[in-house]
Length: 121
Image 1: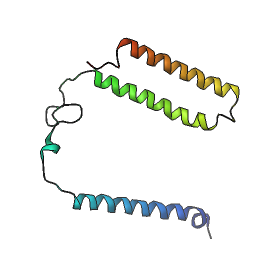
Image 2: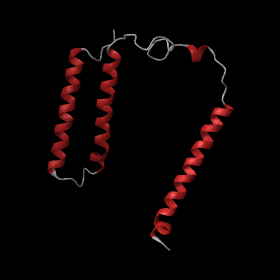
Image 3: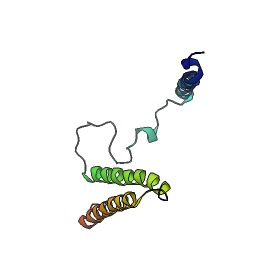
Image 4: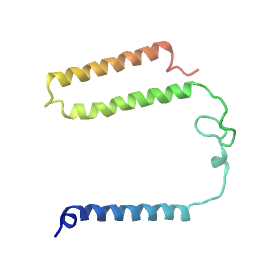
C-alpha cells in the first residue's frame, strides 16, 4: 500500500465526514428554524443601537476601549495556560520572562484603571 492509504486516508475520511456533518447540521438548522420576525429580533443589540440604521453613525469610544481591553486580557490568559502547565519544567529564564510579561500587563491594567477607562458613566 502507498503512503497515502496508510497515513493520510483516515485524515481524509475524517475531513469528508466532518464537512458532510457540518453541511447537514447547517441545512437542518436553516430548514427547521422559525423565520418569523418578532420584537426580539427587531430590537436593538446589546450595544443599544438600532440594527437597521446607517452603519456610519458615530458611537461612544468606550465600546472600542472595552473591546481592546478584553482582547488584551484574553490574550494574557492564552499565554498563561501553557506557561502554567510547563511551570515545573521550564528554566528560570522562562519563569522570569513570563513574570515580566505579567508585571507589564498589570502596570497597563493599573494605568487604564487610574485613567478611568474602566468606569462606565
